[in-house]
Amino acid sequence: MFSFFTKQGPTTATINGQAIRVDSKETLLSAALRAGIDFPHSCRVGGCAACKCKLLSGQVKELTETGYLLSDEELDQGYILACQSVPKNDIQVAVDMDTQLLRRTVHGRVSGQEKLTHDITRLTVQLDASLPYKAGQFANLSLNALPGISRSYSFATPVQADAQVSFFVRQVPGGLFSTYINGHHLLGQQIDVEGPQGDFWLRPADAPLLLIAGGSGLAPILALLQEAARNNIKRPATLLFGAREERDLYALAEISALAAQWPSEFRFIPVLSQAAADAAWPGARGLVTEQLAALLPTSAHAYLCGPPAMIDSCVTILRQHGVAREHIHADRFTTLQDALAVSA
Image 1 (tube, helix red, strand yellow):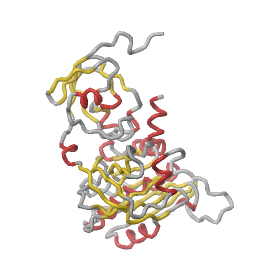
Image 2 (cartoon, rainbow, N blue to C red):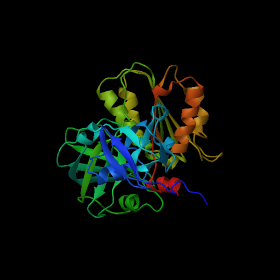
Image 3 (tube, rainbow, N blue to C red):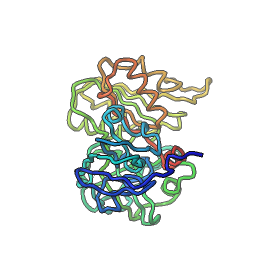
Image 4 (spheres, one colour):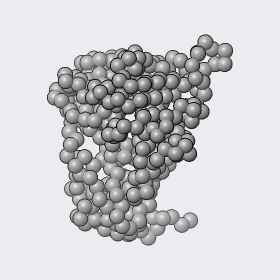
């Protein structure tokens, strides 16, 4: 049976003008790291997009579906994930090394652990030093109690003067790190926070804001809104929050506080997908996508965070209703299991 890798020999990859050898079956990222290039990366399995780069020439074999992590605009511009790209021939790529220079690891201790729902924990960390980041970005977390294991989570608050950061950790079935966070007493435990990473943050504009969150995807959306309120952003905002049942709704006090201080119109619409027909829930039911068209503000700029399937469906509807691709910013919350399943 024919395989792409049959007779595939070494190729040359030129990264920001520096040529390196890429062995047969080797990914661009692996070759770059072997050659001593400090190439931006994190998960190495196509689950975070930290290693994205622009393919200037040549062709690559992509080991996973990159559409879950790269925006339509990035795909149109030729961006690839280095950890999931095996060169078919000699290639040239450009990568923003500045993002790597801004990243650093800060030590800290767990200073707060609060159960938000049955499967989401708010983890608060007191850092030893301030870590600058933009609201909406994420970091890699590593616990001393779980050596060799690191997972990516979005900051749930903007930068604080006291150097505290917080994250919403949803328990993933079979997930070692998330299960440990949700099931063990962690106060005082040492933790490392490496960041910032990601390009999900509020862009300057005057257009109305449409924000869509699903599950723990509320974390970067909340941080983004809190930072906007702190900066007195006066853009009308509509927040759609998709959850399964009423018990899955959380951070309602923070959202109410945001609505009270927001200097323009602020609408919050929680949508439950599995609310029983006879339940007392008075709000919207069904999928977020079923509510989207009726609630879409005119000329809105959209910020979406949550499971890939929800994000992709929302993006399709937004495009159908005239929202330009450059005005849609998405952070797809994939898990390590998601990435491995796609590559299998």
